[in-house]
Image (cartoon, rainbow, N blue to C red; front, side, top):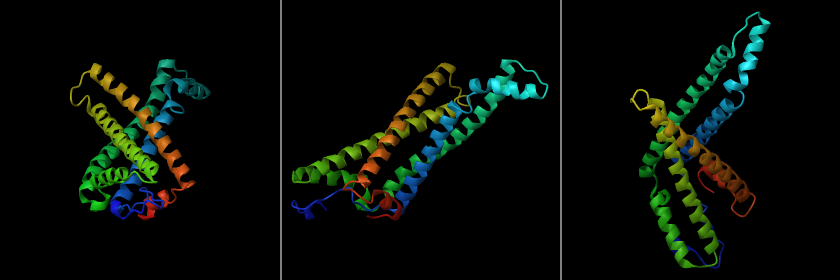
Length: 220
């Protein structure tokens, strides 16, 4: 592919085809990550037990029932727990998709395999032509995606540990440490999603058009 590029013309390595399996994986991952973020936001705001204690007390008081803060907290906490169960199921889905992405790599067309794309980048950057900046941009995007998969792997593994910690007999101290790592990694995921969305919007409104349609239809 690199050998057919005319240095005098504008070339973008971002213009690629995407297999159906990769496109389905991309959108399913996008939906599950979005759903996961929503569950965290809901539990941190609307369903926060501490924030709803007074609400529970007031609503029961209207029906002639008086409860302590501890009792009201126990009630509001149940709603948070239900949402965490949803979050856990979404996490299982993301863990499955992470494994599926590895499998997809083996059945991808040769030109769409990660190994082929990385080799293409090396060949393009070695040309040192007028499109050098574009090649470097593409390289940094691929590095960013590699970081994304690392973040997803950390979230999936720590999430699975937290989900089965009691069944596996993992101590409370270790669970606490794993939870801290899981929470930190989620902020990195938020950052990636934000940067990714901004990058796509900028590209679509710049010279690299068709990224979204390419991930829907398979080619640009």
